[in-house]
Image (cartoon, rainbow, N blue to C red):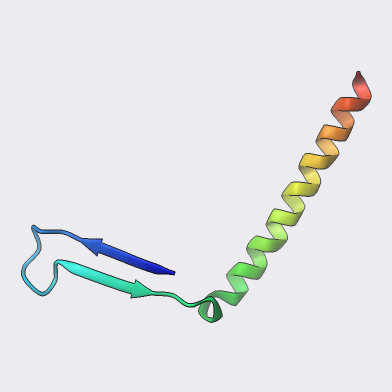
Amino acid sequence: MDFISYCSDFPDGKQLIVYRLTAAECETEIARLRARRKDFLELVADTKHRILELE
């Protein structure tokens, strides 16, 4: 993932910033987000099931 920022008000040589982050550098965060996504989807499915039972 690349983060790029540009500001023409900054002095020459500091107007453009490019920061690259590779998947290997954030494996822990990716695993945590995948687990949270799984939990969220399970919560949505459970909530939907309970709502449909009320009908």
